[in-house]
Amino acid sequence: MAKLAIARKRKSPFAPIDQAVAAIREGRMVIVVDDEDRENEGDLTIAAEKVTPDAINFMARYGRGLICLSMTPERLDELEIPLMVSQNTSRFETAFCIPIEAKGRTTTGISAGDRAATV
Image (tube, rainbow, N blue to C red; front, side, top):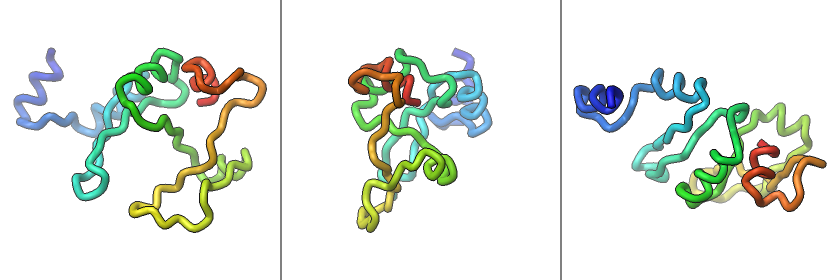
């Protein structure tokens, strides 16, 4: 309730970035919203080391979109994960890579538990 009161005082529905970062560090999920001139959407965001099957299930159930994992170019190279396409012609040039799942730690790769293990 206190956080809602803070947002009302600011007359903004958005939390300051430092509060969002603190929430992520605590293992909470936040919604990161992009500009209305881009995709005008919100992404459910959680620190990878805090991901649980319940968090994955929440994202799949309520987010209703792709569940993606951000990785540095160095980590992608280390794991030999290639880009999905070599010539990206999408409007925003989102650098999607091929789908992945944890080697030897998953069954079908589709369950919330398998997805959390992959993250």
